[in-house]
Image (cartoon, rainbow, N blue to C red; front, side, top):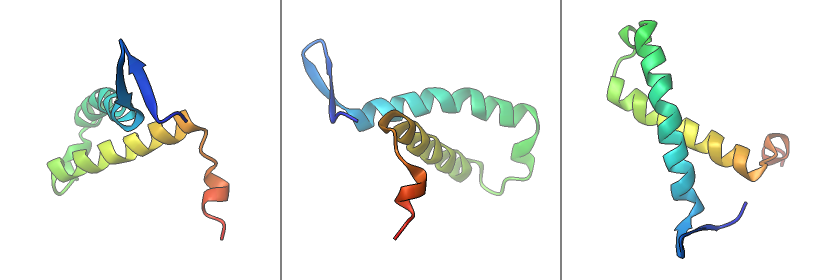
Length: 75
């Protein structure tokens, strides 16, 4: 994974790009969870949404960087 993206001469950190992608992916996921009634069993919707965004952000960054999940947890 590269550290920065060149957007019209402006270097943008890759973490910001992955966060934007995760936020875009989170919108339909939140709408789907709302449509199926999942939020009725969630204690704190805002906290759950932040946690969902963090999980999606990590997944997007791992997918983009070719992260090896198996070797990451070996000692």
